[in-house]
Length: 146
Length: 146
DNA sequence: TTATAAAAGGACATACATGTCCTTTTATAA
DNA sequence: TTATAAAAGGACATGTATGTCCTTTTATAA
Ligand code: FES
Ligand code: FES
Image (cartoon, rainbow over all chains, first blue to last red):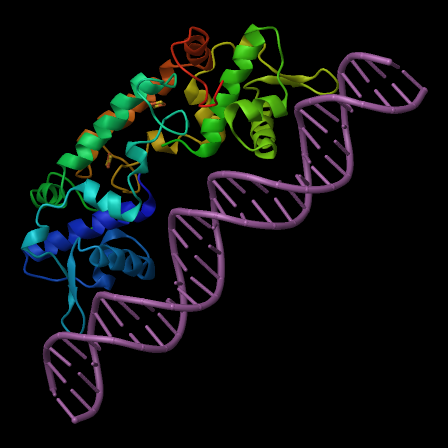
């Protein structure tokens, strides 16, 4: 399961992408409201994302968050990697110090399938692919009443 | 990903089963060493397990932990449920308040497959099935040098 | 040029998971 | 019956994730 911070990060990035497609650059307040996260905490997470170049920001009047062209294919894996690390894609599901094909724990064969399946998802899906589904009305960003 | 406490719990139960098959009832010290966990913390987890009837224990000289016949098909799900709850089998992978088939988040279709796959594993595999693999030498309980 | 609006950054606060220590209870062996 | 060994239980300690608040920096509009 992803950490709360990672979930906030992914939803924030998706919202920024949606607004960018409307030629807008949302600020912390607007983003926090839309992703249903505390504003100050959201600010911290956004800082992590810009510091790691997953998106850009402008300070000052009229500033906000946005993607430039280099960032237009950002996998969920990239986000997870920056926010919580990638331990969950390597860890032994049974809690052994390392996962090892040649000296497996009793869950290894089954667990590996699930773990690799999740890895495949986050390496395939991008902020842009998720945003596209929302734009098309095939999925939702939040559970706010409209 | 399972919590550390849940991992300890599962490994502890497996070790107790293995020792029970040898007509032994291990104590906290022996269990903690075998599962590579802190002894006092292991004691707490074992208390949770016995309080919830996942296994039995005897106090006093010659005491220790063991299964009685009612407990001989203990799914991993039962253990997870008692130790960390079952939120992870219901949660939205994108962080929405509830997962909902009819109003899905953009990860829903793919995530559900992985989440349900893991659920299937933990509902199918039992402490006894894992122990059996270790007994047969097909898998290991720990990474201690022998 | 100055006031303002916005992100960045640092310090602090809270909650929960993990881990430790000491006392109490209880079953058995001597 | 008493001493001992073992689990149970309560209180406390530490670490990490989550969350808050206030100050600093910086870009723009007036
Ligand atoms: S060794 Fe446990 S999952 Fe690979
Ligand atoms: S709504 Fe997000 S996983 Fe089902």
